[in-house]
Image 1 (tube, rainbow, N blue to C red):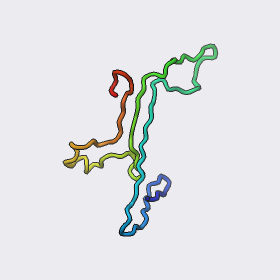
Image 2: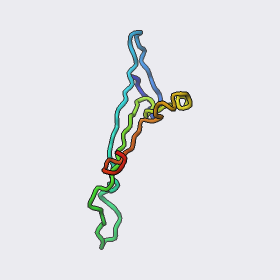
Image 3: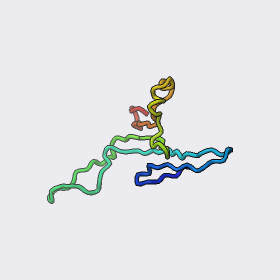
Image 4: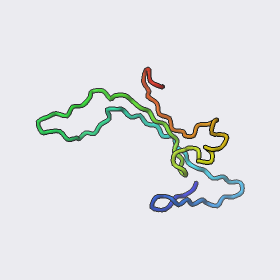
Length: 105
């Protein structure tokens, strides 16, 4: 696997490979769910008032993406987007859905 150095990890160092070896790139699947009523535990309110908070978590949004060690989010580069394959495969791997009845999941 390559090693990254520098203040912003912008320098990629590849090890020398033997003829029968292949480079390995780490790709992770990242998924998370957010709710519209996610909130902080602190806030600004006058001394005599209670903070008003909704009881429910609210509408959910689920985000799924693949993160690549070398290029960040997994997606086609500009040259690939302009080539003939652009109509056959998606440009990005990120998917956003609303996982609830009558939404898009």
